[in-house]
Image 1 (tube, one colour):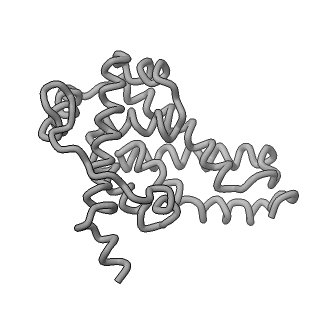
Image 2 (cartoon, helix red, strand yellow):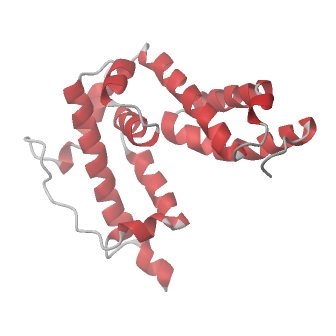
Length: 198
């Protein structure tokens, strides 16, 4: 309820109830369960320390997600300082079968009929999460930083120590791979969507 801060014990209970959602959110972006757990733990500690700042003026989940986004960016910054050997090669090789040498699709995805209506369905969001989980780590990270956390290209390049050209290539490949995955798993004729409607 807005306008009235919760009691201390009540506030802690409400924070704990948000933990599963926060863990899913962090895991989707960080791709590392330990890093996700750390980011959520830091978020909950920051929320406890900043309880007076909350004061019920917004939705608790929205407020916690805002804190968590900053913790995720901090985690990505730490990870960017310790790049794993060969990670960039893995990213580039993972989607090679989908593209020609010039970077264009080998087979274009089908046109979607009603993408806006599908966004409102929980099942669609579940399929989207599965598709995001199939992206290579760096490709997914660039996509989530840009499209979900709202960082601009310069910030992403700085955080991940990549060139703007490489950033745009990864964004393009992420978008196209997600489109292909969603086309196959949701919008396509052979998807589970048709089976769910029966």
